[in-house]
Length: 226
Image (cartoon, rainbow, N blue to C red; front, side, top):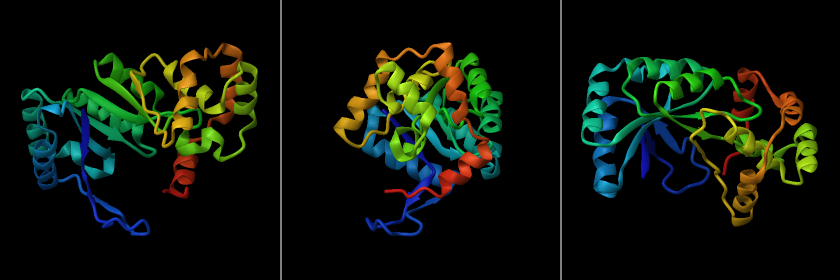
């Protein structure tokens, strides 16, 4: 079972709370949250991840924190990090350089592909790669019209979300692809990806979906969240 540390929930169950949580990747937060996590999960915890690690957070420059993460690994709990934003690739490479992480969770989808080579390097270094936002927060599942994706889905006799997830599953470095489905019918549609094979022609057509990372993350920041 995996968990993350680094955010403190502040919404008090109010959906309109602003902000609903506060990010703090300090040593004090780690010590407090790892204690809480172990109390709740005990021996079930097998992976503990830094939540939304970015270059400007400085989390990988905190030597004392890195030492305590190493101590956690020695106790048999794998240590990972999740990355976000336009500097994903650089953050992944920094994590690889430390040699102290067992896994990385990153955004990769047909629209945002900037971390591709860095994820391959992480995989080559022995890190497990977990992919989040394979559907670009719904943009690849009907949230907006995407003719190239819709054509590909029709040609393959499946759904756009299944095509998008199949594209991620086809990356040589992808070990785990998270769904994020919130309803049974969404999950069933996502699972259709298991039977989808994307040939070179389809993949070439889907190149039209790619956006520069700066554009992708700017648009992502403006999406409505529930």
